[in-house]
Amino acid sequence: MEDYFSRFLNLGWQLRQYLTELIESLLGCIDWIPRRNEVQFSACHERPLPGTTGYIHEGAYVLSVGNTTEEKHANGISEGMVLRKGFSNICQRSYGRSSYLLHGFRLVQRLAFHVRDLWCLFSSEIHAQLTRGSSEDIGWLQRTKASLSSVDGTSRFKELLHDIRNGVHCLPDTLVYLFIPGLFSNHSPLYFVNTKRFFSKMGLTCHVAKIHSEASVEKNAWELKQYIEELYWGSGKQVLLLGHSKGGVDAAAAISLYWSELKGKVAGLALVQSPYGGTPVASDILREGQIADKETRRIMELVVCRIIKGDMRALEDLTYAKRKDFISKHKLPVDELPIISFHTEASTAPTVLATLTRVAQAELLPWLPMPRFLLSASEFVESMLASLKIPVVAPVSAAMAIAALHLRLRYGERSDGLVTRRDAEVPGSVVVRPERRLDHAWMVYSTLRKDRAEADASEMCEALLAMLVEIGRNKKLCRPCGCLSLTASA
Image (cartoon, rainbow, N blue to C red):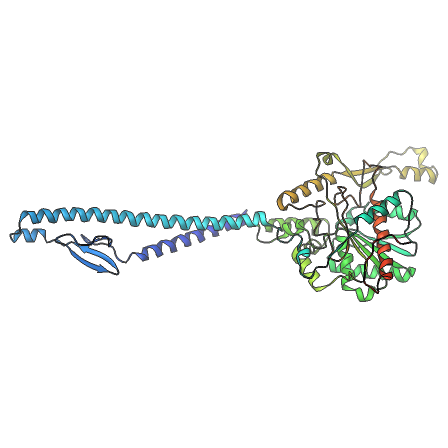
């Protein structure tokens, strides 16, 4: 509140200064003030009134009326002359009053126009801070001159997903599959759990990167580089990456920064709902100069740094300014490495408000009163009781729907709730744009209400990785001509 009062106080002093300067400039235009019976007239009077003296004062015709009537009457001047002089004095006083009124009206008019201009300037600045936001930054990657054209791989993705749902799995076991979680994943025990279990049942080597997701992008890039090298040298297999949200940004940063060392060790990268170009959510929260910017930053520092024990740079690195600076300095090798950009749009239907997402699970064993005869039971009974878990749910889909509606109304952009569709596309990559409405958390969490007629998150991740393998195979075959084919290989 102190910051609000100081801003309004500074604005009041500025307005006072502007008004003072305006009044001084207007009064400076008046060269002289009439004294006694001296009256200023406009140049429309061709001849002076009888018995008056006319002269020019800086381009203005002026009449000077002296107190000579009584003197001439004493010297024997006729009474008609006196009446004419008195009539002329009355006329001159009436013209003088009208000129005073005219000058006052013009002064008030100029003052009103200046106040109006100042108010328009002030309101335009407030309107720009409140409404413009990130409107000029969203989709900036597609507007750059050096931006590469992307390839639409949505139809091929649908074909692979259809085959997977019919029991046709084509992922090779000659690769190591590494999933990189996004922001705040350290506080989400079920992040990528179902997907990892799904891949393990198929006999594939699958890992979830154990990184501090609330750290900066460059720090996580270094940790991922070491993680990839350990997996490669330990298994002798190339690593196929799939990063969700900030995890995709971290993985892309690792490849951009250390491509000379990771070349030949990474088979491909899939960025799933990743703000590669930035996100308006982070930019609007941390933008300086907007209303309550300092208070908002203090709140975010309290949540990220003290409660979550993270680094504030993890959120700052997702702003448009930071992403523009990083991408301009470190290029992603899209011409050498298969890269897929996957983005969705969240549903804003009223039914989403009743959808609950399973974000964790609670064990009942520590809280259940155990009978004495079970305390000495076998390990089988204990393991059976330990498997009794209840899901911990949260209205994540409802929150994503509200955020997506906010971005739609403010910027007119389609998003999954946190990332706009245009900011999730890497220039030069193969882009997958599913028509199904999916929010930002759907790919890593499971909802209590599942639709068996639709593919789940694990099947979609398998289709994306299978597509990466196919693109990499086609790149090797078409490398002499430099083409990129998305057709099914034999």
